[in-house]
Image (cartoon, rainbow, N blue to C red; front, side, top):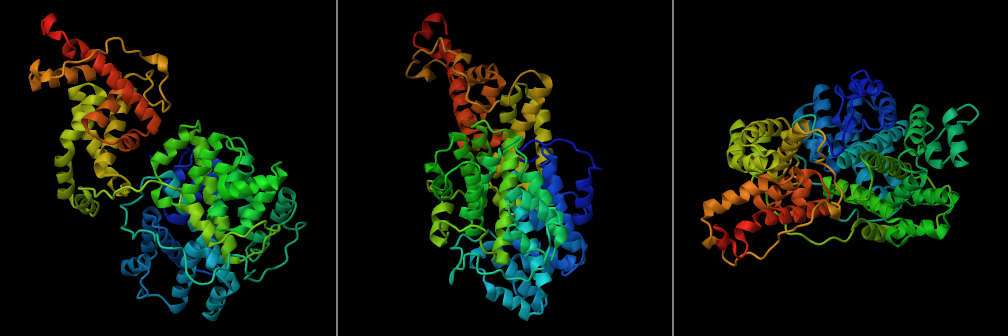
Amino acid sequence: MSYLREVAVGGAYPPFVALQALFGFVPNVFRAQTLLPRVIEAEAGIAYALLLEERDLSRIQKASISLAISAAHGDAYWVTGYYQLLLSMGVPGDTLDRIIINDHQADLSTRDQALLDFARKLAKRGPWLSGEDIAELRSRGLSDESILEAVIVTALTGFFCTLSKGLGPFADFMLKPVPPASTSPRAVGGYVGGTGGPHLRTVELSPENFPPFAFFLKGFGLIPNLFRAQSLRPDVLAAEADAVRKILQHDDILSRLQKECILLVGSAANLNTYCVAAHCEALRRMGLSADEADQIALDHHKADLPEADTALLDFILKLTARPADFGRHDIDKVRHYGFTDEHILEGVVVTAFNTFFNTLQMGLGTTPDFTPRRTFGPDDGHRLAAAERPSEPVQVDPDAGLVARAQSGDLDAFEDLVNRHNRRVYRALVGVVGNFDEAQDAMQETFLKAFQHLGSFQGRSKFSTWLLMIASNTGLQRLRDRKPLESLDDAGVEPEEDFRPRQVRAWTENPEQLYSAAERRGLVERGMLKLPAKYRVVLVLRDLEQLSTEETAVALGLGIPAIKSRLCRARLMLREALAPHFAAGAERIGL
């Protein structure tokens, strides 16, 4: 499962059939979007139009670009997917490994190497792309049609990488190791800003004879230069128009205003002056003043937005600017503000779509359709992308070596992991299910699931935390099956009237004088097992297993406020249950 829940759509679902034809399988990142079938249809439409047919670039060339871009983004999910696809096309693994690490000794022609270098620059340093980069490709014998195709493939790969970071799908194969994405300054040298073109020739398409242009003219009041610049590929333009209709023009989940704010904030973070100007104009048409739109682009915290919308924009800004730091805890933060899985999914998809259009525009160098009120440059990128956060010491996962060996197929290493963590997992499961025999069965199920999905573990948390997350989910599912009417998953802060402690009395300063360690432990365990399950599991992970609040939140898929609320309530409940045994004066009642 991904960060969000999924629904069944059936293997004959047409977009899945198209994706099967493209990749040889249906990547889980698309299964993770089944709450909104229309967005899968839009994504599959663009991918099918661009990737299946061999026109100016071969399928191997396009997949190689996608492999290089996925590696540049540090996206192990898509690196693994494209690696497997290219292997199936007959490309040697050694060549693919060299593409991943950007080794120019790869067995590639000078033209193909130049194409990969261009795509990497566009993906990671798009605002610095200039006409000179286009001239270099032309000097290698690449036509404008080939260059356009490379630009769109790069943009689509960025779209897919944003989806995988935002949705956290399980890997389709055992993950390939990927060098971390660069955290150095975006580029050195001349800053162009993505509007130094247009770089490629175009052909005339009339809205009277070309329906996508008629659609854009009706929706935007003009045909944006971004779309005119792609006129060499009318089939892709048709797919993009369909995607705009299905992703941006629906307002049944997120409103049109919310989506435009997402597009605006993401474009500003990507230093895309063209798209900032376009989305500011769109917001002006929705009733916002030009100053209000500018403020959202510059610092949405200072704009007059609802608190929930500010949190949503924080979410998409992190996904845009710091995807390597993005994780389940970011999903939980926006859930706390009342956003459902459908809201969150659409927010991720709109953010990914924005990456697609920002990359397209940088590669094509199109000039703005509206006069920008300001130009975004490197200084803006530093301020927008580096959201303030406290520095944290780097923690080394003691299991990292064994995990790497196990992911490479070493069964002995996985057995060592089982032996290292089986007691901890068992204790946690006893605390969750409240039954020793059932905890034993759940432990076996937990390690089986961990083995099956080990390839999806990417080190975003400690292995022990990931394992306890599987254990807690396994135990909670057993409780749901046992008591389907009991709510275990409400992520909100607990209402105050649920529980009022009645016997919280002062304990004696030295309870060890009353009980031996074994007796005391038995009392605590029995008291803990009597707690309601949703409080018991938090107490087990936080206090018994010594996970941090953040790790407990990740393990249970809850927000930090909910974890703190439940933990406080669980401690009070347990303290009240134990008060007769440890409170001052307990000696006088025969204990």
